[in-house]
Image 1 (cartoon, one colour):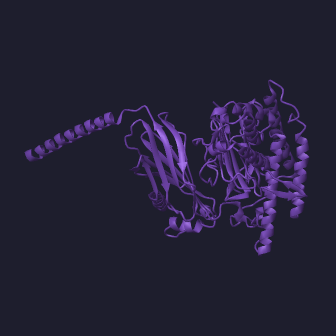
Image 2 (tube, each protein chain N blue to C red):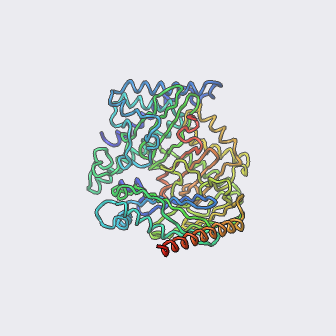
Length: 203
Length: 364
């Protein structure tokens, strides 16, 4: 064992731990990032872009976006747009000492899905050179979602969650409703525009 | 004080207080029916109050926190001051005060739980001595690993760096919490009259095996050996269900992950033979049994009642001596055991009750 105090914590790995919460209409992603002390400077150089030794809100936001851009989510092969909800970053020194954890929360809206079996796929390609990964489904909060299985690659960069969805309006009905509401909105907007234009002409 | 002398002192204290711990109703006989748990809580509260009388006003102010507040979740596997703990620091106590803390822990924990906690602390003392030796060998600061060497933010190891806190007023009836922790240790014992929970708690070890005065010490050795015995007792089909296809690099529900429940994986306990189920429950007891027996026994009964909803999962090689992760998860239980960076000499574990972390049920 090393006699160095660095033996107390992660050294040359960048732990990226993901938890995915599936709801019928969305999936929430929580990602915790902990850089080991030997790779902390490398990671910090990507966060602290102005090199002033602190992590600003803008830098945290930009880094979170960069991480999320390397993450792909799809359901049944349909790509999902992953959007940042919030992030919290530890103090610069905390990251440099290899113990600070940055926490990123993101969300993706699900397309309308029929009842039955679905497959949510999560892939994390961020810093594969130094990354070690965890990826887990949370027990769904909704009783309409039941996780059937989780399938991962050996390094947990790739996770497929097989889940059952039940008890919702059929996609056809939902689509019909959407078309109806959309048509009504277009009609109202058209009437409003014509009325507004006519008033201007009257003036 | 020389390093070997400090370790010898720590060891002797462990042995002394272990003897004290055997006096009350610990292991020797099952707790009597009725108010056994309440009696134990009363004795723990009494030991806590006895300690308070030995502290000055500043010490009492340091150890006491509101029951509801940020202190409840302020625990970590990390050493101080990398993680900033609050409470009564052992290194700031007199010998008599430190003995009172150990007597309190001896009453609050089972005999085996006290042994485990003492050995985790002793392991940190060994880590401190190795850090100091490593620094001397490299020509760096020979005080590395000591409290006084924390100026540049490096960790401080050893018995002095453990902290005690009371959340709420120690009481035989009202809810309160006893916290004891430091590097690789977080004991969060919530008591409420006849009820108690130790969730969440984090027993860990580095080094995981060491020798003191010719005695080999393995703070989490039983956990390791019982798990390997179980996975190797299963047949090929059962192992196929238990073993995950991926590497698990760390605890999934470690510090800071309160209130989360991951999807269970692995083989159900109900799919195991009666003998293998017994092995699984004895593995679980290594964590549950840190608590005083009066509380551990009803907790084990609760856990054993749900074999169809309790899972055992494994990741890694199955030869004892290898670094392997395992998890036991049930409706009221999460246990994880995670070697760090593939090392069998650096182990993190976590014990949780997703329905009752910090005694959530007791205050309802």
